[in-house]
Length: 482
Ligand code: SAH
Ligand code: SF4
Ligand code: F3S
Image 1 (cartoon, rainbow, N blue to C red):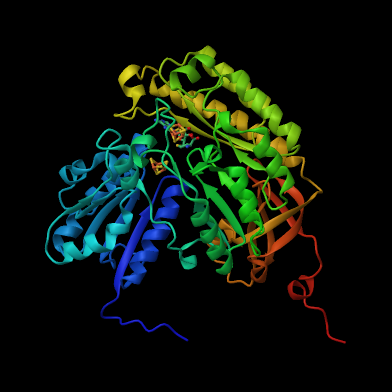
Image 2: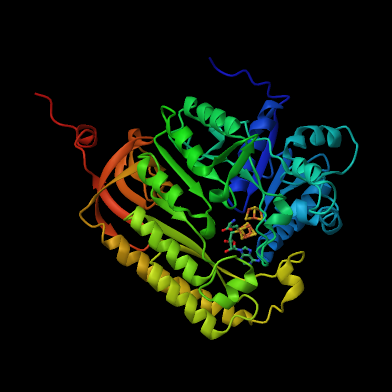
């Protein structure tokens, strides 16, 4: 049955999302809730009644881009004052009223812990009640319980149509972070670390499976530190993986982002023993220098990190590990940087995300240390490390030549979309269970399936191949009828 939509009442929502997977998930939730309040999505700012920016504060550059974008909307807002502009996410929580000061024509500021209030706040704006703001409590602005409450999220709202593919979903198992790495703003924007209850998580995973989801990625800032205590029972990530592993329909389980110190042998053995678990681990090292790690207050040494890598490879041979690095952190010498290079060479990550240090006001790092590495040096180190990582990624990807890999088919590849291939025969993209990207010429009917692909070429980022099974060949190359 077709959905009855009253075109007079339907409002158009434009939403732009930057930042980490948490923000992607938050946007899915907000759109799901606004759909229930009569909104429909549009990809045009001009046609939108409501424009939302889901923002990130992890680096200054991400914030400046949003403020620049807002500045561009000033004229539009003057011409069409009935359009609503909202800033949500981490920058809304961090800057609060300052958003209104820098862009007075913004109507709405909502932190990540208050997103459930967006429909109500939009109604208030419509009713002429002026600018609205909803943010969570600061880390010292109330009792621990009140602070935690104010950062809780409203996760069970799921909308498969909002995800890039309906058969893959993020599931938040942990809110906030208590690690307080000295460079990082996240503990301030997302509040205290709290594990969501296992019952809620399993119920949400069931709902996702019922909606046809095959792959679930658990999300948390330090996802492997997950802990939920209920009376005398403690649930950890390994227990959650076991519980969700039982759900029919779920075929793959992943979790990001892991914290090196909490990568226990017990968790690794659980990953090994549960066939649906991906042998892919994202465990940011951040630096290869003990001195810098100490200043970052990461809580481990380079030797600890190497010991963790040994543990991973002992228990999960062939596991793919990826990392994050910050170059040019306060006081980073050339010697420190060379130690990071050494760590990247020894650990042979599948890939690394490399960032230039960006001072974040409100962090311990901004208070304690001088941002003394010149921008050119940061850029140079960034490029050098990236080149080394790319070389390693390419070498390791080439080892897949001739091998058959199992992929979950995600959809048309970027190149296919760009070329505007009309389908059903088009270039498709999928991921292996160790998170490698694979591209091949396929058939749209393969989307959502698990498929074996034989790899015949590779670069640093992608494996290229052909479908191994002959099942679909008659459709791709129709046989003459006899
Ligand atoms: N919770 C995750 C990461 C969250 S932020 C973890 O702990 O691993 C994602 C990445 O951004 C971090 O791993 C770090 O490499 C980078 N990052 C965080 N703060 C930064 C800053 N002030 N400047 C540059 N990069 C930063
Ligand atoms: Fe930030 Fe450190 Fe927490 Fe990751 S673990 S979110 S880097 S404070
Ligand atoms: Fe950015 Fe917030 Fe994620 S600061 S990285 S969007 S938790």
